Amino acid sequence: MANPTARQRLQLVATELGPRAIEESLENLSRLEKALHWIEPVITNTQYPIVIDIGCGLGVIDCALTTDKKTDIRGMDKFVWQLKSETNHFGMTAEEQQSAQNVWKKHNFKIQDGDIDSSWPFETDVADLVISNAVFEHLNGTHKLFLKEAFRIVKPGGYFFLSTPNLTYLLKRIRFLIGRSPN
Image (cartoon, rainbow, N blue to C red; front, side, top):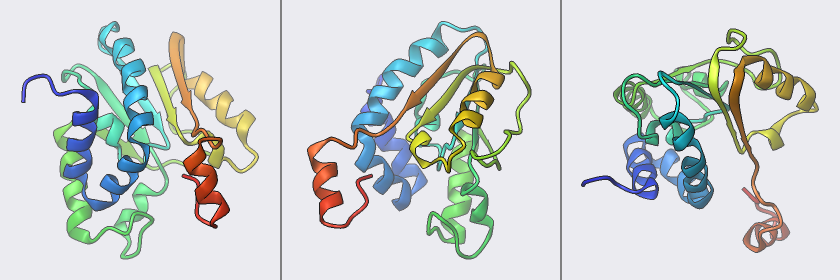
């Protein structure tokens, strides 16, 4: 397939990562696609960019970025590291966990343990782009610390992409009314 669209890349990566990523991506496909349209030009216009995704989950958006090997894409999430245990946040088997790690390696995506509610394990002024996609609303009263850490790790003149779900979207309100998570 020559030059797949952002939507096609997201769907392909989700398929590679397995059932949990497919479920997560389908629910948020439109938002992820819009995020890619904003993020990719920033990466394209930066020589040897460093991208850090805070609360990256399984890294669907990170693996879907159209970059060359000169782009350093990193992610941080505390749930991913629970993959090592028999029971984990993503409900993945050992084989699915290994498969996800192979997908990350294929897409040059490095992921590390970290908690969004505390200091982050990154150097100061290291990232050209910091991504936080549908994470901010999950903070436990640590919003100031989160923003302080984001602006600490982004280089001067760099970018911080913050996105949250639109809870006023009709379908999300209906899900909430019937007792389901709106996300």
